[in-house]
Length: 215
Ligand SMILES: [Mg+2]
Ligand SMILES: [Zn+2]
Image 1 (tube, helix red, strand yellow):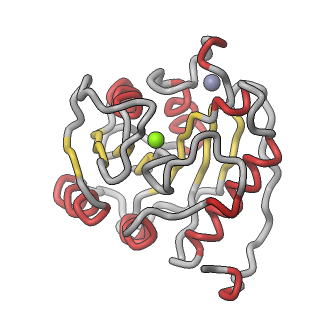
Image 2: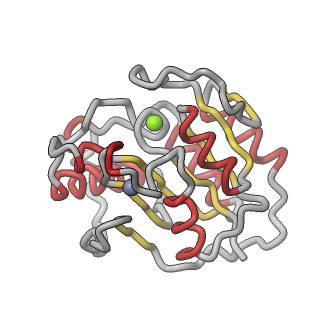
């Protein structure tokens, strides 16, 4: 079975922008690309798990989320990084779905679809909701305080297994704690799934790296 590092998106991989819908505003946080490249070399599957209630609130269109996701993929590819999977909860809080973090549904779905087990897997996020979801499924949790979520200030309940102030600290911690028993078994098809509506994000197809398109 594979080990994964589950990754929150907003305020963890990229700068926090409320209800982000413009791909031009996607900015990787410092050290993100290098850190993910390192974790992937260590054999972890990289799996995005993100609440995007802007969809359920009618503030972000699904196509806009797809464009933002593609832009994120482009930014990561500049570091030679591909996400192994991406799972989004599109629901508004009042819909009471099982997949919106802090509930564990999104992680459980990702684990099931990607053949990932919790033991030896990690979750990196910037809110208590991320940590709660990671703990609920039995991952080791890392609170990254690089870009705090202003709408959801961290209370520290539940406490993360580790607090990191930078992506370098995240990598150092995971390298120290992570014991990968199966190296090199990260060859599973990339999966990008909408939770809830049974609707799949269209496959982006092969990406051609054009350095001129990057800042
Ligand atoms: Mg976040
Ligand atoms: Zn949901």
